[in-house]
Image (cartoon, rainbow, N blue to C red; front, side, top):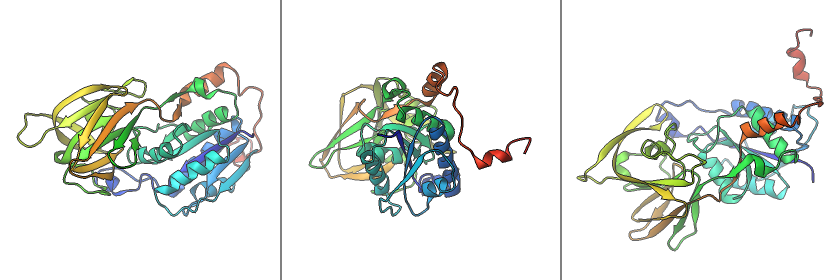
Length: 345
């Protein structure tokens, strides 16, 4: 089977009301199209022979590859995309079935969660373009593509450059199971689908696989109390206080340029597999997205486990490529853009 990489670029990532309610800019189609082109160039330079992209209304990925002159096969997958959350899941499933050996995802925590729910052990290079960006990395797309190309071509083994991600597994009484890549929060007096930043008075509990102090969103609420990074084999649980309870106030960045004070009653480290039970009524938010409602008395059981996607470490992949000389004695295809960069043109 040819060395195939897949690219999923969520056209809606980094564009929702949460960014306008804070002080964040937006990530538009033109910027994403340029990033996809850089991913493709990096991947093919590193050995990818086949590039899979999905057609969607903004034509981000298809527009990025249509004018590239590269030494690889381009395959456009038809997934009937309609700018809905299910588009990402359909793209991931189609790419898995088409033989994708490394998957580059341009989006935020929510986009990568949609991939993980569909393809749990995906060989993943997550690049940050979303609203909540704890799970994906801010990596130059050229290098993210190169790392994917090295894995897809078999020059690097996935096991030597990746680690299974921690996730929060959620068992909901009487309903289908679910998961989050970073955090699950129980909210009261809130509604499913609300896209505004969280109101501190409405959060009752947060369970985090990654509690990052140098992040924005829900993750730093745990990270500024008990840090837990991607390599730490534990999670964090934070309980927020009801009115009248004894509390400590934590100032945390809930969104870009937006700090709020959170009334903390307790926090603790969670061992992998340790169960936290939450009970309704309330709304469960997964990686910042309010998606599931718990009825009064309905229980949800949460566990942090290390059984999520295989996340490729781009720095490690490129370092191994250097030590092993994987890009020595290789020539590039003819790139028409290169002539504009040459001093002798």
